[in-house]
Amino acid sequence: MPGSQRSALGSLMLIAAVVGFSVGAFSYTAGWLSPGRLSSKELVSALAPPGGPALGHRRNHAKGVCFTGTFESNGTAVALSKATVFTAGHYPVLGRFNLATPDPNAADPTVRVRGVGVQISAPDNSVWRMALIDPPVFAVSTPHGFYDLLEASKSKDPEAMKGFVAAHPEFAAFGEWATKAPWTASYAEVTFNSLNAFIFTDAAGTKNAVRWSLRPETQAVPISGADFAKLGPNHLEEDITERVAKSPQRWTLVLTVADPSDPTADPTRAWPPERRTVEAGTLVVQKIEPEVDGPCRDINFDPTILPDGIKVADDPFPAARSAAYARSYDLRTSEANHYPRTAVSAKP
Ligand code: HEM
Image (cartoon, rainbow, N blue to C red; front, side):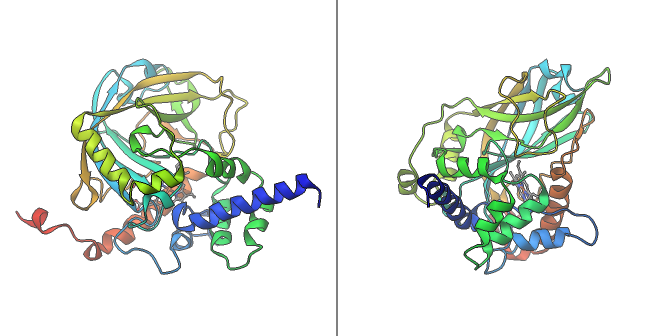
């Protein structure tokens, strides 16, 4: 076999290993939710590890910690959307830092993908919920591709991942990130990305496709996976709790505006870096609370809960995600006896 082919195969094996390792870690599911094909029930079942789901917990991103804070809107984004949260002012935020795993007890260094759920509320009772992750692109271009990824990752057939990668060339960019991107040792250093595109409408009715990111004010300090592992299995929660107790932590909300030629239905395809960006304001995280008694536990950060001025685009993911999150929410809240609140909070 020529050297270049051998090294390509080596890369594929490496990607397969990363994904295999991430069955527990990066456990998204794919699914096209049309009747008779893939239901949200099948989609959520596919997220479960071989031993079954952790009852009472989110079926993905099960390890997390709650926060509250403020979105300090600077008013600039009214040029893109009439959503009230873009009018200059301060708006309450409820959120959750999390890891993409169905195991609430997973050790931090075993989980490659980190996430954040955010809810921003406005005085007119409008609410914007989002759930963002740290890779720069998604792993697959359709919800069904995600289901295929999970099935391949779980398969005992050694050829399954190779077959998946061959059938999903779009996976390469995510695989490259997953194998090569440096780790960091703090949620405070993570850039979180919407990846999915949404349509923003301004007061005059002008529409633009937009993706967004939360860019940390704290400089990222790369760390090797081995050194990160030395910090312990729950370092991320311990670290963010300590940092926020000392001073609020901040992220800039950066909106990226698509050109008409940019793909809006495929989160594996990044938009060119020269696209116009608008800094809409700052997410200020002021208080961390453990999930068990925290305000984020019983929230569903459904990405289709949007204020007037933002709506879904032709991207198929938000609808598939909404159905899967609702299913997961229904299951976990009906299993609350498996994840009871602590005795302290049960007191009147
Ligand atoms: C078809 C694709 C996907 C499926 C089936 C899926 C499934 C799920 C499920 C079942 C949950 C738990 C929901 C709950 O119980 O409240 C969840 C949480 C989450 N997902 Fe997804 N997901 C998908 C794609 C994505 C994408 C594209 C992103 C980001 C761009 C993302 C980011 C997150 C985050 C950050 C959370 C945790 C939110 C929280 O803290 O409650 N997911 N996902």
